Amino acid sequence: MGNPQRRQTPLPDSFATLTAHALTGVPTGGLSQTAGFSLAGRFLGNNNLSSRQAIDLLVAAAEFNRRHPLRSGNKLHLPTSGELIITGDLHNHQRNFSRLKSFANLANFPERHVILQEMIHGGPLGADGEDTSLQMILEACDWALQFPGQIHFLLANHDLAQITGVAIMKDGYDLTERFQRAYGIWYGARGIAVAAAFRDFVVSMPLAAISATGLFLSHSLPSDSDMQGFDPSILQRDLTEPDYQRNGSVYKLLWGRNQTQALLDQLSKIWWADIYICGHQAQDGGHGSIGRNMLIIDSSHNHGVLVPMLLERQYTLPDLIQRLVPLASIE
Image: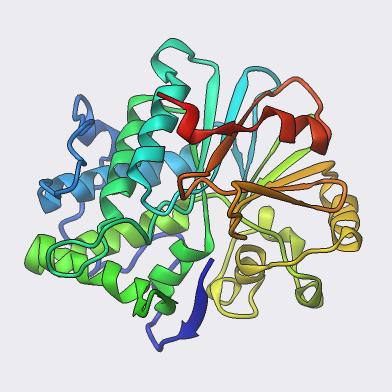
């Protein structure tokens, strides 16, 4: 969502890891350094984590994203059985995120999986005008580390905009700048290291998740006009800096809008997909659809929804629409 305006902020030097100077002082032990460290319930309007705690969470979550047993290339191959809960854009809607966690009840359902996307940019601003959505990212990382292998992040356009310096204007201010402002306000000189860890977490996210029953989950899909020059092999191959730039294939995947049935049919032949479930395109009623086989869901407001399903079952678009759960209905 949002309208991009290009700024001349450089990308990370490498999309496998960040530059050595950016990661100075950032732990590489990942999960071992966060064992027993839980932040649940501490993200209710104020940021009270040290820079070390924030970095530890981001580094550990990035490490797990890359080493995830379901990962192949830049996509996840979901299990052939179990349950899946898919959310759309959350944009720091804390109440909906809390409702999602309650609905998921992962402690009692070890074969249940959750898809998260576009959690940043939104919600109330901090006392100094900063975007506070890094708090939700840290809470989500903590949740993912508490339930390893059950929570999956998909890369979204606002995540990419944040690390590439693309301004996104909303309500008269630049969301990207407001998010960047939080690093210095919350962490002082250590904000640079927290920002580096956040960048690494972002580029660790897969681009898509697929199921054996033909589901294809991604933040968005290319627009019809973007198919010329789009490289569908980004789901498999190593990514390079140009992929993330405007006109790059990752950029096109994340920013595309207004797809047509002809485009969906073309992509289905390439990716062997039957049903697409995406976010990105705002839905005032919580959901919308394109053609016969693309569902768009939005979880970022009071009419937001999620969609639960069984991984072993095939679904049609009408089936999925019937399964939608309004987040406001969850206690």
